[in-house]
Image 1 (cartoon, one colour):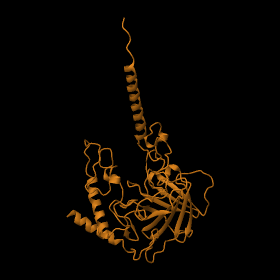
Image 2: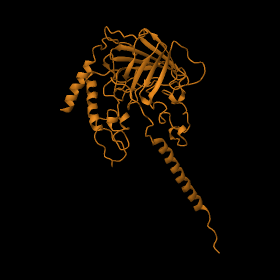
Image 3: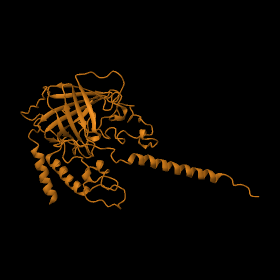
Length: 366
């Protein structure tokens, strides 16, 4: 009975967003503007993208196994969104403090990619997560993936190209020598996902919210996660040195009602799909309805892929202001990680000393 009720509710929610559904096929990455809609203007004449938007959704970056095609039917959308209601109920159930610290997927098992962070001892209960409750739509039609490649997956790399670049720290995330060897996200310097971009992607956990602020010469995109602030310089030129700031070097221009942002100089620590040194990300932001902001991105790296590829989605208004992401407030994890490593090292040294002592010949007795 509950499932039937939720299914009916999901269908109603789905069909309510079809006011500007696609009636004819359009190329991927093309914004579908609601009939008669014209983006409002700022006081200085630019299309107004300002406000707080969210990109949290059920739609993953890459297409899930067993799913074919770029779009869902309305029946498929309703079923997925109904399963979320069950997922929420299971995820909000009290956690047994004596339960083993192992992960057991919910009965719906629709999104195991995020659930490992919650539910069991030491993780988050569902109420602390915001992975999205609805399938992402473009032009009113539900999408199976953010990527618009033919199979919804990352394209193959050129022959001989490594799967991923050498890590910035050779020991990677398994280095416990110093806080400086831990990841920037773990140290609360930047987002631990790709919220800030480019490309800007929901992280599957929480804080997938953005505030856009415009001036005649700049657009600032503030990300709720880690309070990242990405500054886009309008009608400017890329830097000519090899300095690589966080989020890269973003230059923007207006193409009609679309803000086009080209980003280069991306640091290795923010590589995407294994690319960073020669990576160029081109993003397009278009307001297509009062409550929809279309976002498309194109990935180019001629040393890694034969042709450009990318993805798209639509943001929806959050309806609330951004709140402070107090990443380090009361955070004892990092000193605990390093202190724990020192204890292990001391124990290993003591064990090694015992082994050496045991192998030495005993002293002769008089």
